[in-house]
Length: 351
Image 1 (cartoon, one colour):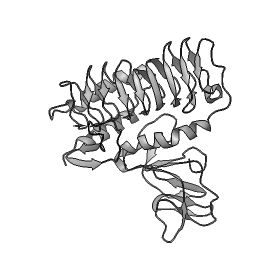
Image 2 (cartoon, rainbow, N blue to C red; image 1 turned 180 degrees about the vertical axis):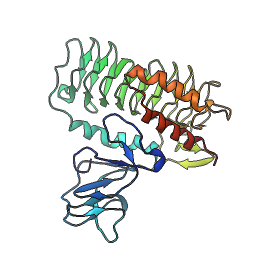
Image 3 (cartoon, helix red, strand yellow; image 1 turned 30 degrees about the vertical axis):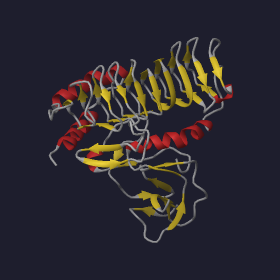
């Protein structure tokens, strides 16, 4: 994003190598990179494009923290470059998944303004509050009675999005391809692709392929891929003291600095009907939460139930994946199975 182009490679720790995600390069271990290239950190969300880049290697910084490297033509990057020229870039530092909420609040509106332009006409029977020029519809299907409110930001619906009658959309809002919005009030969020969303949703990021098909409040939260929230699942996003929300992760307390923060759901996490989550809850990847009504604030990856230490088996988890992914026309490949086995082993290993 620093230079207005798509990523050509994604580097990560070895246990994440081969992580499959449609439309992006496969994850690989770090390797030398020949210029011209920009290496950007996943712990930083840039605001707009970087300024003119120098002819020499440069260290990209924000508030004095290194967030990337510029690799000019004719050079090769193999890691941090000593004495490289520092170049400040604008954006939001991400101290953890919870700071994706900060990125939504600070960057989504301006990012969506850049996506406006060619649009299908707003269908008759829709209600528009605010500037209709701030609506971009890209072959979306809109039933009569949908409300578009652009008074706080643009609304962009990508190809194949379906919006059922009675849904209220409040910008800034981006909805990815083939997502279905089936009811409720949805505001200030980034959703999709291939999600189903219902109920009251505010300031939330859906990474894609997630289901929230029923009533229940979801606010200031992050949903990984293939998350499924049972009917009536509700998140709190504000403490009764109105103080800063604290995370409790595997026995460690983390101060977020956020007054509003809901729940952080890892990939493939699932909840039963009627589950309630306190502000700052963390639900690990692959967890299936159904034990009781009010869930613990921290649920370890691949937990089976919620209040006990019982874990899913690898075979049980993979069997669920084999049933779920084809429902979104995603084929479960041997590479996917291999990655999921390694992720399961990594996340369930003893400390």
